[in-house]
Image: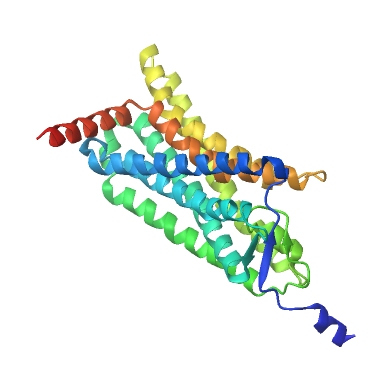
Length: 317
């Protein structure tokens, strides 16, 4: 009996990623589409980071947090998209065991980082609208840096915890992951070890990393709406709502898909549904964020205009 168990528990050196359920005749079309989406994500978020660094008008807490969010979006998409694109052109869409754990780590890290940065941005908007006269003293550069550092440190420990717990599990003969990246829940289903500890930690930390930040954002915007409705000027109300509109759009996109997938599971959750929703928050949301912030934001448009004008003058000289 023990011999059979040992024979069955072969060492898995790599996993096979099934990827997306795309018909063979449409592979090239979807490859081009995903490549274009990834390039737009990289270029759009890089543009925001560069503009914020180059334009002194944007050296404020709000845009400092936005710069960090853009960096997180860029990296978040880069964790999964290059491997997906590579596997779409490969006959054997595999990923090494160590590479799979590394992908899971960075996926968790940048997903958590995005969650905490969205909370920090909600707090920034709350202070700006509810305490405008004290905004500079409350949202000091020191506090802003502290929020970012706290987010990075906490997400590092959280991602490392899950990665180390996953590394202790054994994987038997089945090494096929029905996803386009090394999703933690998919890996747990493949393990032939006891996963109760992993599942318990996911349940506990999920509340800390996902639910609590979401509740904090909702509370912040409830206070913001309450404060806005007290403003007698219609122009003041429009200005306040336009200030928060971009951030609310991003929060809705990110948390809507994540909560729908992980916190509202249903018995008929299909692999296709999980893959499509995973694509929404790992690929579509990071791509749309630069458009949401740049197209709705006069400061970003002004910064782009000023930077281009400077470059044009320098070029002429």
